[in-house]
Image (cartoon, rainbow, N blue to C red; front, side, top):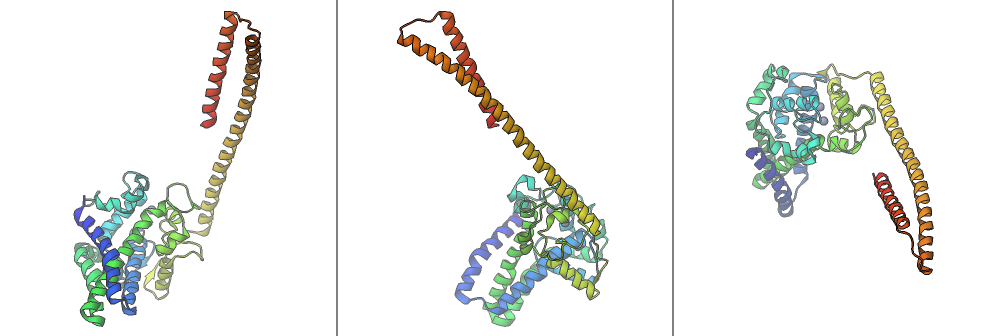
Length: 362
Ligand SMILES: [Zn+2]
Ligand SMILES: [Zn+2]
């Protein structure tokens, strides 16, 4: 067990579920504390999806230092570790998706992919040789060195100080519980859902290569990361919801930052390549549907043949039944050979019934 991580995750969850409602009951949560909550929710959530994920993990665009510094500070405040460690795990996830080396392998179950892997993860499970680009960035190295104090300072210290500015000690407690603890729990669960439910819920319009799925419902809760099937197929695209109407606040933020000149070189997969993936995926879906229909048709043929065979057996047994009835009424006795023959026929009929039933059941 990784006790520090486990204790942190469980105690923040307990505080969010018990202490925050108790605070709301006794003191109320005013607009100012909601503003701290949503401000930090946006800053830390986007720092993970836009910063840790699309910028650092996939290099889907380039960012000037103020953007990099912002996402490193507020990414730390989401208490998900340093960018270097996060990106290393995530690149392993893409490289070995659905296999043992995938840190949050969904084939080990929902709980493991969601949070279980963090509770038992003791240090980096692999060398940091897949993040050489980040190790050569002084800002990333600095954030990696001070990730824990930065997390406490920006994640808990900032909302507590902002709360104190507005409402003294009571305001500070509210800032800590609402903008600090509860916001951390919400952002963390949002990220965890990308690793768990985004590999379980939704469609696979671009590829069947792995378990990743597209779901607009998941996109609503994950700043657009719910279009995970597209992302796994075209990981270097700065968009996850690639269609213009798909809910992806992260891609809109990147686009806006590009407009004001803070980010550049936005990578897009050519439309033809995306359409080709959709065509191939649709073909695979049609083929597997046809295979299912064919299997059902051949099953119907087997059932019809079995029905005919059973009919014949039932008819021959009727003849024996009538002969035996007649013999009993007339007090006639069958020869030993005739009785043996009927017994043999009966055993054969029952054996055929058993075999046929098990074939139909399977
Ligand atoms: Zn990714
Ligand atoms: Zn994934």
